Image (cartoon, one colour):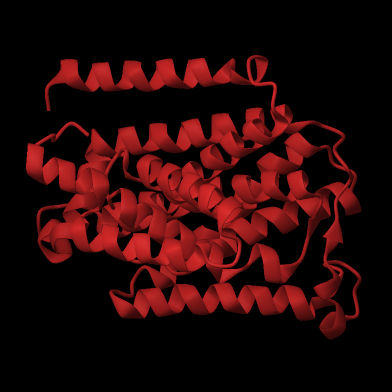
Length: 316
């Protein structure tokens, strides 16, 4: 790839992020600021899924488990041990990544549907552990299905905007690194032909594990931020498989395994859901489902993927 084009993309990306950093100073509407924060939040979440599944082709149906672990770690750290939010946030990411490392070693040896089923089963198992922990072990730790109430932050939406923005920035920057690094080429080789990649000298196990742990680390951070934002969590909410489904749909809409796919897909789906939900309360989910089906039929490779094929924009 042309180095000048790479540098231009990076400069534009940095410029947009820098401009967004000043946004709360110019947005007076709390609703609008919250909506923008939610869009950026889902860009990061979808990017986490794309980081692993989009580039390797290993379809992960259990990323929500690391989101949930991050939520519970920050809740326990703050309520049980009195640790401030930002140290708790970092701990959430570390623990989520550590769990992913331990889980990834055996599960990443599986391929295809077996890997997808294993990750989905692990996510459901973690939800049940959180639900039954108190009754099983007679320890008031997770507070069972009643959930955990975090300390009320007292911060406005701008605080959480500045929490979400840098994490999403790092996720998108990680995508840029994947697109233009030896590590990323290894991930793409795994997606195209894993056996051939191994024969060529690619350490496929290490590459897959690196992508899996990195994705989990960032998901743990997002889970921690959301938990502190909403101040109350339950296992059914933070380990909800619908979050996984939303990550997958957003990435598919934007384009799997592309730099800008999660950005476009998450922005499109979040804004259209907000718009239709406000106008058609009873029917908007049916309408969104129809839009998704039509979009995938017309653009099976996603919005960015289709542009790359039709216009040969290999730098996206």
